[in-house]
Length: 334
Image (cartoon, rainbow, N blue to C red; front, side):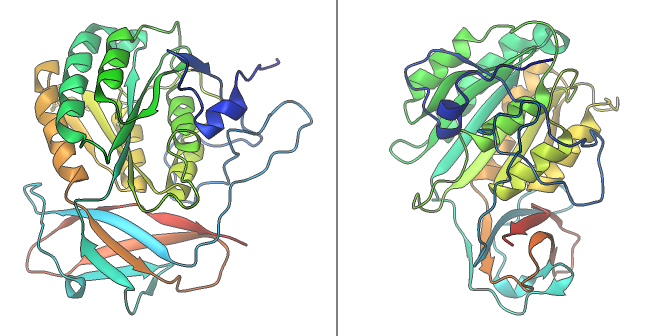
């Protein structure tokens, strides 16, 4: 079966400013990737700009890592963020080798925020879509700072649509949320996240430091994607993007999509928030906002020259048990 990629080159460059909504097609993977959580390193992703038709050779996205820059949050047993740690409180392991010294360690809440807001508009969540729209508008109104932060709005169902390309104009983002529609049968959850990471939030050379994050409202189900869970984790880790997942269901009920959402959050340094009802969305968004603005940043040279995937682990010393949310790896260039 052939797949037509519409505007892929423009999508990879983020050039959709003149479009009100654009359908994005993510081609099939050139390898078979598991859609379940795995403890093994994710496979090499293929760039969104590659035309993945039969007989076409794909290529991978690589960049040199002369310095590893890691951002993370720390919470106590009650889930409250811990804002006063020092470098002496933190240990980081790169492929199980402890990092002996940090080039830099700071808590910084002033980095420009590059945010993606992705809403699931498939049949399985359509009953709460009006509440999701309202909570999303309130969230953007609170979290975005004039002249420093940018965001985009995307939705997915049977296809993936970019309703508003990256902009600093809050009004354009709010208008885009109001135009969201159901894009047909099916759920292309993984394709939407992959397209966002490879396109609108792809790191730009010379663009300076920024905090890149995706907030996705979904139940975690996927029925029609060409990409896999491993694809999404790999491209998010390469691009240093945190994924914050927000879902709605009763707390005592374990939804099947929660495991997928938790895996995405854990692997990228984000968090999963479960709202007991649509009326609790604003409270969950408030917690995400606090997370985004209470980050630690540390940089260090790679501990080994081994190319490919490096596993990361962060530990925090202290008399209490802490929960650390940091991405679990990075990629060094061959």
